[in-house]
Length: 406
Image (cartoon, rainbow, N blue to C red):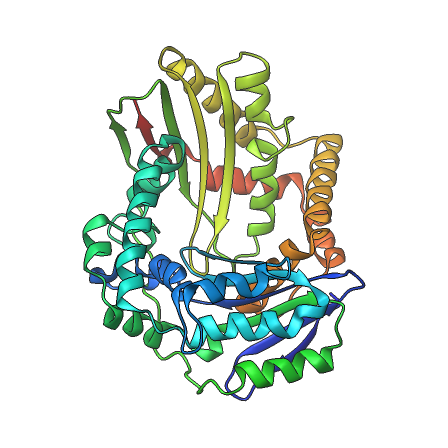
């Protein structure tokens, strides 16, 4: 892949791809998320994502918001189980402005008490909005069911109780412990030379003191399948079925991505969509997802249906799972499945913002990023026997957990 790489003396990695677009993108990705929270810190990784925009040593919240918006740019952030990301989109002439800004809010935020208090109310409202949306809330509850007792099972938003008691000292403690320079990637795409990117990175990120990671994450073990039914006052019944799956280091993850795409990926021709929606009209939304993490992974199927169609929908899903575990894909079926996944990957990489974030994650995990051609070759090497083996490992009914909102 056409990216240039430089490592600052403090360990922060700088990744850049030059394009001819007038629009540019940059991001700071930190290898720290919900799974790195201590018991009393539930929700703090996501809360920090909010309060870094509320003031630095030289800017108030309004000036942070306006710095890129005044020139038509965008500034945003997100938190996952394992990452915190601050990213920006802007015109290429404002590259210096963008790099300086995201470096300022990442490393020089002051977390004013007044803004912390105000943002607590915002996050509490965000928690309430999730509780009003069972089709999203059920995923958090399912992860809690799967990763019972492990930080992976924590809701990214946290609990109201913990959010209310966060202080500036709590925020600074999490940052000092987890924002390690050897676990930070700065990635950019735009019509700017790599030489200039290096100089900007040295100026705005090079001053950060080296702070290498010393602690090791607590891995997840001892998965036990569970079935749980929760009474909810909803019009629909919501259901998630799933199992732990392959992590980011497991070669079988490529086959798992393909298997997931066949079963319930974004295509309307996925097996589960054809069975539940197209043939029987039981579900408006039926999908499957595979999320690999650094040392574990999660596969799950979600659908929402009328309460009277729950058992019939479950029977159809089990029929499709049995079929994909019992019979190899034919030559033409496998060929079409590979072409579909390759096309989806190509379309996704056509978005420079998506490509930047994907490459940043790849360098975070592997310290490299494969080209589409390399990824295509990995997909092409998959056989029907590979997929059958993966299906019988991950979709084994004795390993599946189920959560139902009824």
